[in-house]
Length: 198
Length: 198
DNA sequence: GTCTATAGTCGGATAGAC
DNA sequence: GTCTATCCGACTATAGAC
Image (cartoon, rainbow over all chains, first blue to last red; front, side):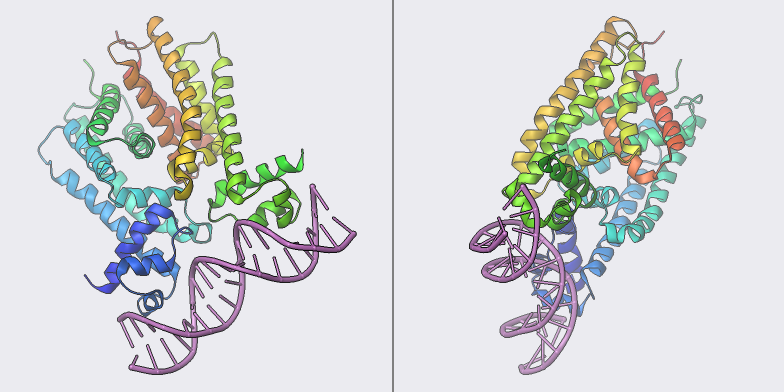
């Protein structure tokens, strides 16, 4: 891994744990195995490090969504959608930085950079949204999903539930087993609402 | 309003917008109409101001939940639960600080204070959880809610949806009309899942 | 209780040697 | 590219006059 990559990796971990203002260049450098002034041979400022970290996280986030859905090409709609949600949920439980970083700065961006950050998020979120929508439309055609509910409402509910789960993970401090149970309980209520009836 | 109260109010607004590290005592003092050193006549440190702000927010959060549920003593379970969710949602849309502050530091507490903060939240959240559970149990007795779903699952789903909505508000930048529409769409899917069938 | 003045620390960022 | 040394500004916090 190049020094540049090490810096980004180190910054991602620290930013996601301590926030933007709470993270110092001294610690980022330490995590990358160099001293603070050496950072400036690779990036021009703290903001530039942060933007590169966000770009990397957004890329990983998209990749995770696409891979999770492609993984189950021939399964039922419920399995596909459950698997996607499970994938993100698990990443968070296992203390990965992707979902933590993603949601932290989606929700609470540093004010000076708010505009730029929103632009970056808009792209990756659109892709995610579209993937879910396609899965639900396909589910309706296969008569696995209640056609009387607008696709848009279902997509919104799904995304909302996923966001809520991100919060739950932090709040409850689950171990893996509790997490699985929690997710399956919430999923059951959701699926009871959207599955094809009768 | 006493100077002490003005300081807390000022700090709540700034902490919820800029985070703990992003908020300076100079600005808190400015918002309270005094100079920075005068803060120390009322509080011994930045941390102490922050703890008092959290206590106030948790109190307001509980109060909001209790009032919202008592307000509709004789309505249907769906109306009661919808009204409660709507109340919090609206507070956030109207840029109030209660829900914003509450969730910001529930999710991302400053690390040095993490333990103490969790204790404070545990109390107020328990009350909220209990209120929702009682409403759902009552709904089951009135045969308005599907008795085959465990109460616990429904409570978790409800709370999860509410957390997700907090995120949605920030992400979509709704105006009031869009917000109402969004909430009612998501509610429809949820209620379709939990209402008594047949 | 409020202020001015200031101590002491740590942040981001730069200069310049190697 | 990496380092030591350093600048400068902002921060929390305190001293002491009124």
